[in-house]
Amino acid sequence: QVNFDQWFSTTLGEELRIKEGNYRVIRRRVAWLIGQWTGVKLSQELRPALYSSMLPLLEQGEDIAVRLTASSTLKLAVDDFEFNTDQFLPFLEPCFSLLFALLQEAQECDTKMHVLYVLSFIVERVGFSIRPYSNALIQYLPLLWEQSAEHNMLRCAIVSTLVHLAKVLEYVIEHT
Image 1 (cartoon, helix red, strand yellow):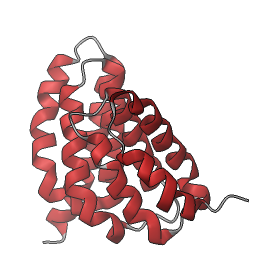
Image 2 (cartoon, one colour):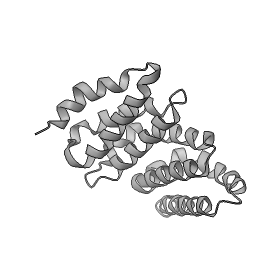
Image 3 (cartoon, helix red, strand yellow):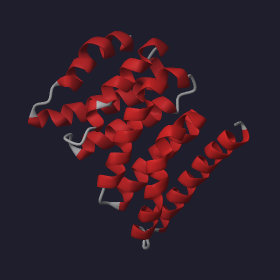
């Protein structure tokens, strides 16, 4: 039987830190593996380490495939039944900022949809805690809407994100 907590803390975490050029394939695969095991064997105590380990993989200098895989891993971690918002809050701002930067850099419609889906999901899970970071996304969505004139699925993702943001902001207005 695999002790995933130990494997993550020792071997996998170290693999993610190696920044050699062709090692991006390994980083992507390790990020994917962590995402697959998150809901199965990763203890609650290691969730902050998971969030922390995904941040460098989302940075602009990283390979786009690694960045997209790291975003998927974050989504899987946030989607977990045992997700603890309080554990995630220290990582919310950098995660949101890095994902937003990825959304702005993305060229392909599918990539934009994927990243927007992850952002929208995070908004839904953290609720009103997203408020301090939501303005940039709210201001960007009309531009994204204009750019996506021929991509109805992307427009659906934009509407979905706006619905999640509206729910969060409505909650904030009602409770202030």
